[in-house]
Length: 390
Image 1 (cartoon, rainbow, N blue to C red):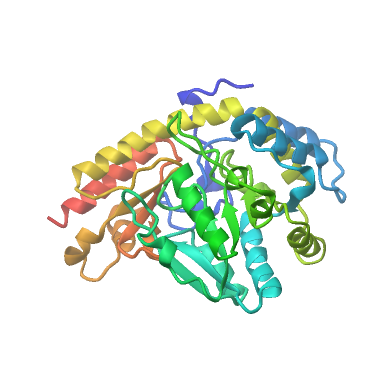
Image 2 (cartoon, helix red, strand yellow; image 1 turned 135 degrees about the vertical axis):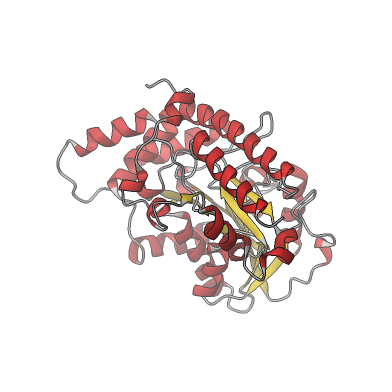
């Protein structure tokens, strides 16, 4: 195992010379802080496990790895006290696929009430999953500061709705749902017999102890409630292995699980063998790397907070994920109709994600999971760009 210190995460890995989506989308003079992957090398144990498997030299069809599934189960039990029955697990090539399968499930098993509640702002593939699977979105606006759930949630009309897709922790707000907030959601879902799917891909990225991510399924108060819940987990965001394509749908209800399993068997590609190898190594051996990475992210978060305060741009409290959500709506009178994202790309040569894609025009999402010196340079460029508006 390597020494996971500041120097380790500062180490450049030349992503601009690779096939990285993040680094090749824009020109070489642009600092890319948009898409949600990290500029850090994966932990040594993952690299070693992948290298050993690659050196076997034969890459035929692979069965679902029971060792990787058990490693995932053991990890969630050890860190969160969440007991996952192995029978509940349906492998997936990614969480976006699972979101689409959930919307397809609503359409198939609840054709008379297939509308799906989606919190807004949220990761844009929530909306695209509903649209691609021809179910109607019912957007619930979250408040970016303080208590995020809408006032009067309990009185919102649920007629025609059969499900709710939740992001836990929340992307892009960076909000870590509390037990009280999740209980309100569970109560509403129970009152209206909603199937509740929770994307928990950022669960390992809680920045401040002793706060912890609460797996939604771990809060189920009865077997009947548990059977209406589905969770999606993956090692991809926590250990920076999204390119390996391995995720898990946790589906306690046998009938709902059969729907996921049938699609996994017949419609979507199986998890590839390197995805299994990387997932097992991450869940078994990746904890020292994860803890060191979180410490590095906390330092980067402090830089972003100082930038936001210095320029009077409200920043959502970044409790989890490595994605800061910055309110730039006050800049609108000086931008002449240009979005903040386009302004910073044009003037600062910094690529951010446009908040409009998540449902929040006038905001930008900034990825702080990069080398501290690079983040500092990007923020300096953005500060210089803002100075041109004065």
